[in-house]
Length: 322
DNA sequence: CAGGTC
DNA sequence: GCTGG
Image 1 (cartoon, rainbow, N blue to C red):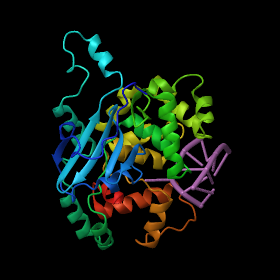
Image 2 (cartoon, rainbow, N blue to C red; image 1 turned 90 degrees about the vertical axis):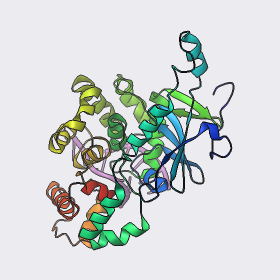
Image 3 (cartoon, rainbow, N blue to C red; image 1 turned 60 degrees about the horizontal axis):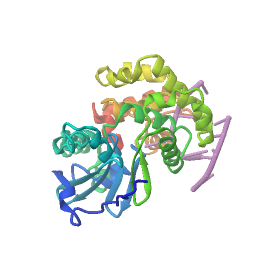
Image 4 (spheres, rainbow, N blue to C red; image 1 turned 45 degrees about the horizontal axis):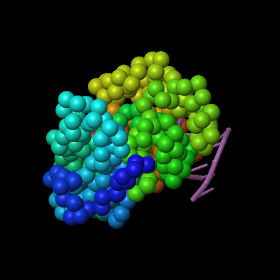
């Protein structure tokens, strides 16, 4: 950690100049529900109501009060060194200006998508949604980085959230750049693709407790590096849902469910409905979807997605998140 | 058995 | 079939 250790920032009141806010009603965003729901595994409730995590290679703390979303961004530990190196325009060069941080946050939470109107439409079409929606307002889909999203969700197969979170933390610590320390706790960026393509990547991941997923992570990193590249992966944002899904499913460790998670949570495919065992049971028990088999076959997977798309419309994946 | 995949 | 809550 740096010689002048930074402290975690809880609330704007202690040092208002380090915080900014965006207008954002609770009906449009519930930070606690969104950041703890298993969409992203990199946010941590650092104190009651305050969420700290890594986004866009920066460490942030977020908080809501009333109709505002507050945020603060921490500087990098070697930021002064960087600034000294740039003798032309110091302070400015290494930092993000406020317009840029506002934009990053608005993009990540997709705040231009009006959630209240969508809730009304889903509630009108579905009585079961209406019952749940009252208890869970402000649940929206994050717009995550495609590389982070892909490799995170490869880790979710046949796994549980507490272990997934720990695995991803160790992945970032071992392969990602250290950004800063807060209260002596180091924060690391999610590693770029190039960090996962080394010959020893699989063995290192196994040592980190990835089990058989170690081969999937290193194998998918290689496949992308030798194929479409990080840029090509990101360009799937403008491709049709079916094509994005087909490309992703060709990667080792990526089946229909993981592909749909990546499509929905990072590639702008709002119609993608990831069907896990939980959703499968709900489709049968609560919605009475008639499916014969005992296991979630590819056929059953497709039918459940189609059922919810028919019920909720083109943003079915967003409704399912609620 | 866990937010499946080979 | 990796691993742990």
